[in-house]
Length: 264
Image (cartoon, rainbow, N blue to C red; front, side):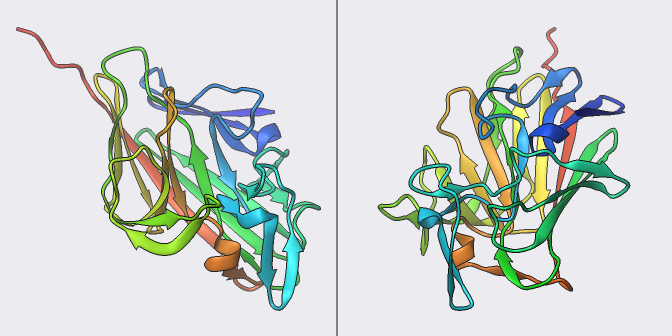
């Protein structure tokens, strides 16, 4: 269930069976994303819906009620209900019901627009009948090495980082960004965020949100994640979806070749 799109130097492959994720993004002949593995959380670039990041202990509160989510990353629920399930393709892109693990009736829609120089991603969460909280985002796993030039360089500037508590959950307390390694949420982000593989590709990322998560601990990969709200948003930063008001997030990735320096 792979759909392939080509535009100039860009080749995009979407895997409908595993979350309508980006299975492959090849630019100028270089594969930018980590290859598939048995762990659906750790490869490609997948949408996170109807929540992004962790939810504390798999529990959230809304309009006086408690709701429990499957704990897939003990002790927390992480990355939503759609990243490892099959999506359907139609004229409007890709869609999926939020599923039995989500206590409200709704669906997600994702759209990709590819040109020779950029990829526009749009993710939406819709309610069919009643209000519910949500947050959304993408989780790309970028390769640190492309087999040429130097390792991946990240130009990421942010004014604030949200601290984590002893449960490894993002809080409302803000601090100045440190040197990392990071598995953290940032605000006041200077856009575009730039990733450069010397001698190969320069990729810039923008999003219509000021919330970004960066995970740069792994030796083989780096994750730069635009999100509509910080982790644990269902409790602390709820973005309420209604039948009349879906939640939407757009991100634009643009690229150019990073030519190696010429020698005399």
